[in-house]
Length: 287
Image 1 (spheres, one colour):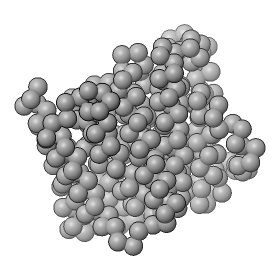
Image 2 (cartoon, one colour):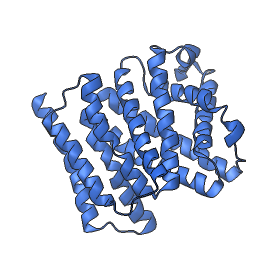
Image 3 (cartoon, one colour):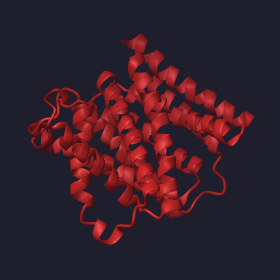
């Protein structure tokens, strides 16, 4: 379980970094959310095809095109592709902190869905942990002015899609590993988005392509981390730890932009940590 928590913390950091890069790609280089996601899927798919020639890589034609429980794996992939597109839209329309905060409604949805769809026992400690993390998020963001409704709806939609993706990955833990997940996201994303490039393609400069490549590496690593975590721990138990993404955002602001968090924000961070510990502590006592 400690490894699972560590993987969730790593994925939260990587997602914050990745979506910050996506905001730059949209606002500074003119790429659309669909194009950024398509390029990511194309690069991962190209890498998978290259690895087909290396037997020790574990990549096979069967795993790529005919995976076990194919429809479930592809449904999970489609949910992640939708989440990726909507999250990039949200980050492009709203400040990073606000988009991140709204995106972190996913852990609450994950806690509920873990009980409804996976049959996990969602203890009072887990509900309190998720609620504590959500309260901490509100203290950090302190929503007042709000963002544009398209950005808000995109962010909530991304959170819902991401929660569904995690539920499906948890269901598939016995037949699919992180490599399978990454390959299916690439296949499904390419199939769904290729036609849209007839309308949404924008010329990609060498500098923009380098950022897309970095974005792809970061997002794929985040994907591998969360998939690995969900194979090792229950979705509802890990959900509160996903609020740690806001702590990473505050740390990045402090180190890179010399923006120190306020005392209220630090209190919110404490609630996020307490929420994660509360959920895990209760699970250990009831195990």
